[in-house]
Picture (spheres, rainbow, N blue to C red):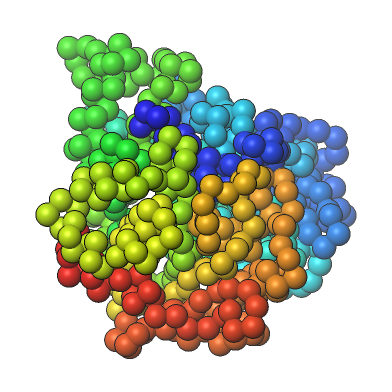
Length: 547
């Protein structure tokens, strides 16, 4: 596979795309909710399905114990001259806007959405609330994953979380790929347009969520994978001040980085965040490749904005790393955590136990990594340190080369970086850390597994949401775990402490403890309790190796 084709495959299995693409049900993302409609603003006082926002009234739907409002615009369509501009307010509308269908997904190639999307008019969010009860409810704003180039907020059905947790859940679209993270010397705010969208959605929540029964003083920004990385970025962004009160980072940290060939052949070592100067150099090369060359570099944005969406799709996946050294992210986020320059809010953070089985299962042109590829990848990734890594991870202790490699990548790329961020955060704010450890969670693909997957990347999502239009296929023990996790997550959203929920105690993460408490989350008796994460994932070894 080429690098680009592999990244598309990685998107499919990176969150919920294999399920959506192979089953063919990616949720209601095809059309925006129609403006206007029957009725008037006076309906808002008599109809629980009608809510008045600052831009106009909306009519959602009531389904038993939840209400849903879909396709709510939180910013103007970023089209024409607004392409590669920070988001601006949407237009108001007369009457009552029908809000029963999700807005279009942001432009992306087929992957998590089987049909893809060519829409730049995509800055919409969905609100799910309990249909009863009194008092202002905690709010969870969910930022979807998908590698910064695929996905949609509407793929996450939040009815179980809203009803059981008595919480308001907001799922958000944001610009992806070249539309959200492109950079050029003539473009202010290069490399952070997608993150600016997330801030615009959080600002909309602050101004409007009380009308839906939510508490604007109890807002949690949460996300998984790229959404977890985004949450960490927002923690360090000065312009996010006052927009949220707690943060949840699932399988995504500021410290995320990888070595050569970790996820696919010919992958280059990098960190998730990049200097804006490097992005701008890449953007200038891309502009030239697209025919937007001019003696005056300032003319390039006008030429690029005139290109149709289809013309940019070939470079969609070349711009999937947010930039720092910008107004939104002035400091590299890990350095911001290290120096204590982040918002002082409680944090819930964690990862799955077997993150990297997902990529390793497709490593050799869609099949699990072979013994020969394992030998090649070890040499390319570790060089002079290969012998030390082999000694720490003896091949004889794993049933296959693929399982050995996935253990190495899980530890070095995912688990230890997530733990590192928790240690930095815990020096200043309350932190609770977890590891999702279900040994046999529901699969993310309807195809037979190519290797033992364990608690693969994104497998925790079934415990919180129904995905891609499908009910979570949980057995009774997994359903009890799901209910406990929803209780933990919504207790955290309400109070800043998941341990306030009924069920097994969840002590705070104390970086000075040996080991600090990390909560294992698995089904069955004894499945919830402490785990020594650093020992389980060899984090001392990786820290000493310095790679």
